[in-house]
Amino acid sequence: MTEPSEAFDQAGVATETSAASGERSQRRTSAIVPAQNIAGRALVIVIAIMTFLSCLTFGAVTLVRDTASVWESQISREATIQIKPADGLDMEAALSSAAEIAGATKGVKSVKIVDREATARLLEPWLGAGLDLDELPVPRLVVITLDPVTPPDFEALRAALGAHLPTASLDDHRTWVDRLVAMAHSTVTIGVAVLVLMLAATVLTVVFATRGAMAGNGHIIEVLHFVGAEARFIAREFRRHFLVTGMKGAAAGGVAAILVFIVFSWWSSHSMATPGGDQAAALFGHFAIGWSGYLGVLLMVVVIGVLTAATSHVTVVAYLSDIEVRQTEG
Image (cartoon, rainbow, N blue to C red; front, side, top):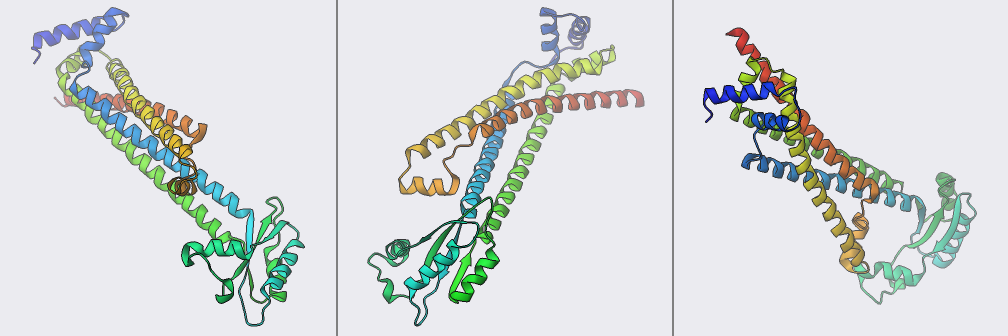
């Protein structure tokens, strides 16, 4: 515990050197802002953890958004005609007729009939191998490749199919596209909400850390304030200290998040053609967030560092305002 006389001495040194630079400025800073101690190291770790989680959230949102865009692009380039079997229906002739009608439609680039072998392979995971399609009323498919620039008139195509093939139905996948877009928007909204909560937790952590640092040196700050030191001078010292602290923690968390994405991207590229790798790639792509994702992580690091400094500045100014109010009321 610093004695009052020592506090006045330190305050005098700090006030005297407020307009100086170099070595005296360093002594002035160390007199106001506590050196890196256990509490300071703990703050760096907390900021690093919050930055790491924020960057992971940002990266996850980027992955889901990009994957949903790929899904939407792939689905919007294709449509399918499904023909259900019926009594007296010649399935092969119906497939050829549906392909002819679709191929003559403007906006259709190509038409492909899914043959019996391909249909059996599609059903094999559920019905097993060696499936005889003649024994089961299995619908058959015609895959249509669409022109993304000038898509066809789906209503006219449905009407033409219905006039010639009552058991045929056209699926343009717009329902799936709408669901994917809604899912992407929901994911982005949830991710932004999580980021806001993490940034709010970081702000509160910095507020408590700044209050603790000021409480430990409150007698020095009050003496400096009473002898004429400006509030912006004291706030600047805390802002500089917590900016360095915030940047250290944010940089550590950002680097850790980048390493995680690099490791997952490497794992994804080396797990191709495996069941687990194919499933993960189908759901999340190849875990590559791209340059925009890495730039977003760097931006997150800068934002958290600046936010830490700004929060400490506001906290110090509010603390000094309370001192002035107490002095006026006294």
